Amino acid sequence: MKNFLGGLIGYMVILLMFSGCMYPALDMTAGEKERRTLEILLASAASREEIVLGKILAASTAAFLTALLNILSLAYTFQSGMMGGEVREMLEGVRIDPRSILLVLAAVLPTAVTAAAVMITISSFAKSFKEGQSDLTPLIMLVVFPAVIGMLPGVETSPALALLPVFNVSQLIKAVFAGEYNAGAFAMSFASNFVYAAVAFVVAVRIFNREDVLFRS
Image (cartoon, rainbow, N blue to C red; front, side, top):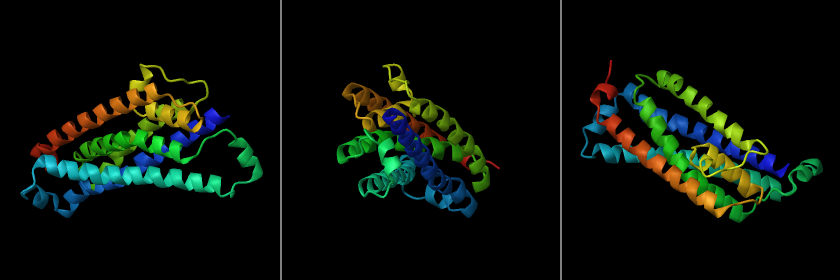
């Protein structure tokens, strides 16, 4: 039961994190196109790399804070005794302590950056906020699949699966809250997600250097 509940928490954190990143990313790309402020920003002294970095940091901060608040609210509810007796019995064995929370936050950090970079890249192609929403909705649905697979009992992390984005974070969160944390799997997943974040940043910068994408009619 603790593995399932740990996986369920991981699923919720990932889904809320991507959802929390979606609207800031849209507003800073498609939204700025609609407001006609993107041209002013690109004409400033800041380089395209600096502009993209600022947008990614803003969107990833929103994603990270969404995950943080979700975890802290869960921890407070669990520790304050607000849950009923039956729910507390179900959560028996689930470790929601400061160490577990810090490990989970460290695990989701590079994924938050990756989510921000990918969403900013995709929404850069949109000509309007509404079109951007339509473009990003399939991404949210795509994220749900590996997150759901990761929460299922009996699904274990292997060296190959530790390289799979979203799934590896789901597995890490499940393992941490179930008290089955493995340092090797954590390091491999964190490193791979850091690489994905770097690649996503490079792609986003290249898109922002293409005016045919940013100002397509």
